[in-house]
Amino acid sequence: MEWHAEPMHICFYPFLSAASKYVEESGVTLEDLISSAVFERARLRGKERIIEAIKGGEVRKPAIISNAQAEMELLSYPFARILVSCIGDDYLIRRYALSEAKAAHEKILAGSSSDIIYELSEEFDIRVDFFRLPQEQEQEQVHMPFVDYLRFAANLRDKRWKLVNRGLENGRVKLRKSEFVRIIQEAIHERIKNDLPLDVPADICEAISRYTGDIKTELEEKRKKFGDAGFELGSVVKDPSCFPPCISFILGNLKEGVNVPHSARFAGTAFLLNIGLTEDEIIETYKNSPDFDEERTRYQVEHIAGDKGSVRYTAPSCGTMRTYGNCVGKDEVCEKVSHPLSYYKRKLKLERKSKKEQQDKSKSGEKEQ
Ligand code: SF4
Image 1 (spheres, helix red, strand yellow):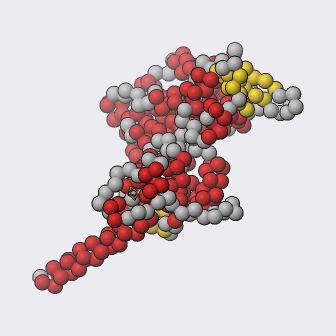
Image 2: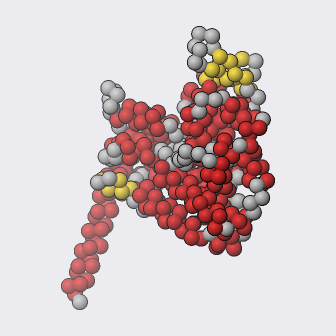
Image 3: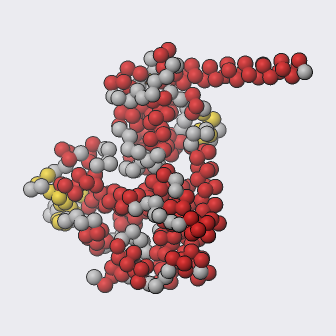
């Protein structure tokens, strides 16, 4: 179809093979892209794509009003991939891939035409059939082969995605159109993530270091805020070095974008609520999850916090953590406690005590001098 190669269309889906083909045939060389003044806008936008991913977890889709603007938007994507590859940080790769996939998902849902859904089904080799349900004029249903469904839904943890909870007919799974778009997001995410990092020669990385520098700074700030160095969240300063091994493991996996089972999510959320993090701060820790859905996460966090008329849950005990396989990395403090919250309190006390001892030691040393 002619519109496949329209830059004003494909610039929103730059991971499509039609988009790579367009860039290839445009005659723009790698040398042009990394150094020609004509493409500075594309380079800046490429850098911006990654910074948006780090900061907000989603790459913004700008309003495109001309072919020239669309071409810059399109070219910014291969440049962003080069930047991410030069930095070579696994966390950045996952976050960037997920942010591009989420942005595409939002764009598809916001569009009025189903053409892009057909196009993407073809792109990912999924043989789909669309049905309009007679009683629900607005609702379209999609039937897709169950093998493709299993391929792309494997990382979706919510029980509604389990094959046993879906209608299955003649080897085909029934989905609402919006659910199918969510499956497409998974396919996009896999493609972008699996293609990174590219093998970029060191001299090219050197030539574009003025763009990678800003990204590294942003990444560092994000790490400082939510990474190992400290959970400085709002006015509450928590000390993650005192978290029990099980909770550090869960939070580390969430941060790295690894899919975490429900029981572990529940334990992590209840623990953080109990030590005083706000619901917004907790939702932030889930933002890298492959199946992150802000509305759903908020609902679940509010439920555990007791905002939904239910009781406020406390974090599960060590016994329950063991039952669900979430007791990971036991250390000597674990031997003295039966609850992750007791571990945290005990460890905080020990830390304070050892800090005080150190201060006293250095004070007496000063006096002796
Ligand atoms: S013993 Fe308790 S605190 Fe320690 S890792 Fe296991 S569940 Fe966590």
